[in-house]
Image (cartoon, rainbow, N blue to C red; front, side, top):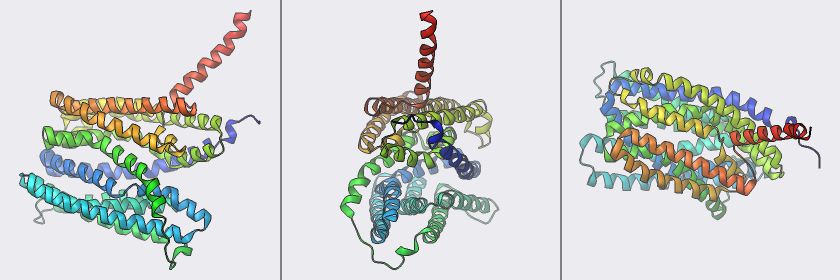
Length: 452
């Protein structure tokens, strides 16, 4: 058996692709935060809280409406394209879109009936009613962008959801501030979000048409619905529960305390989420690289790739987190009066994000090595624990309690995943692997000294 050498691993390729993706995703993140800044400063903390609370619910429901096909297409489309099975390739995309429309429509209908009966506040009810129309739109945007990404279009997959949607939202809110007679409240901002998301959906459709293989144009689709559903169910659980885990604090604060606290916490959480940007960028090529190494049974190569990439993303995340930790107060002040109380929550969440960054992209390692069902069980269990712990802490400490609950849940989730990967695959997360390597080198060097 030949010795594995670092230069033979896809580390350099993942790093180069990750750096390019970092700038692309950075542009998307920048526009997202610009849109939040414009909305938050324009409507004030109370109205922004109502909007953020409702939007958090719509994002989670949209993930459910995708039925897991936003991730499933990344698996099926390249496989069918490699096999030149064009009828199934067209069929899986068509099937995913139709199911998203159907489920999104049902969610919209049930949601409207529920809100009309149980939500007394006029502004909150109207915001929910507009927001439910977002569910099928957001679900379709995710599915179409996933199809574009599966066809190889990283930039064109990001532009509709980030650049077009957030850019149009900024433009609509900016026009409303020019005194054209529009009432700027939470329902208006949700209508603007619906319009901008619809533009994003149209752009995603054009991108999908431009990227699709010509061989699928005009052919009759074929369907393997049973196989698609079996694979998509655990992916649905993963996508929906991860989205729910990230938004549990916002949803519980809006339910238990006030939508104002929910908006402040949403802003704090999104700012702390910038720490994950290096890891998200590296994941663009990290996931397929892990899948390739796992197929070849190259455990040593997997460990070196995991260790190297997680060390880089940890250091990059630590630099970002340090800057945000110091500038938390003036950063929130930019958004307007009333948001500054979220500074402690930002700092709590930043610490948790740095700790999780040190472990690397463990969820991708589990899903790319065939352990997506175990990953779904672990994530769902952690999400349930997070909801219970956060509810108790919110009652006691308000939005800081939500931050503590989310931080503890993120750390526990990553610790359990690390234990799973160690026991099942003999793989350690980045920092632990670095420490083990350092200790091993010290013991090797100390051996001859003891012998002397």
